[in-house]
Length: 255
Image (cartoon, rainbow, N blue to C red; front, side, top):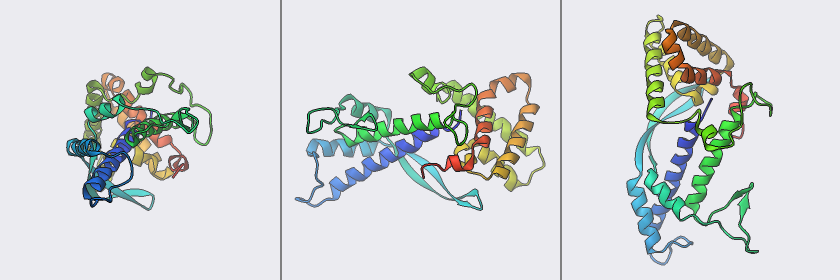
């Protein structure tokens, strides 16, 4: 449990932005001054088509003030559709070194196509994020009942974005928002609580005091649920509770 699909979305956003920038550079460069590389006319048309097909997603931008996040605006980002991703992976080739051997970086293959390197980097980052969130804060020791994923079933077990899982997550968020509305909180406090419940990445970066308050509210919410709803919402609620347990310094590791 913890940050799963967020890591993938963030990295896919980087992939899309990098590809769009590369496409614009090719289009805007004056004749005779094109960027270096194997970008022939076919490559340029391919990149142009990819940029046009990217899925536009609205991203909320926040800044941290007094150890809390506040919204400062929104920006459109562009995510490559699955068809574009499969087009890149279908023709992926591992880059060869001067000795003729496959090139590697941190034990993983390096590809001839930068787009494939971005994609593989996104997967690698997601796998590391998942593993890191299964460790006890500040240690290399696994939390109880956790296991480092070694196959696809284990890798996606807690972060699957299938229709049923998303439906339950939406229902859980709606039930929590309804519960919060009946707790006599101010509008600002209620909105903050609902926002943090739905954004585990932001919740992990809150101060210890804030996370303890959020945790107490979530536990109270859990106690208010029927036995049926408690079982149905177990995964999303447990995931948020785990974010409350994350140490702030661990969440900032690597920045």
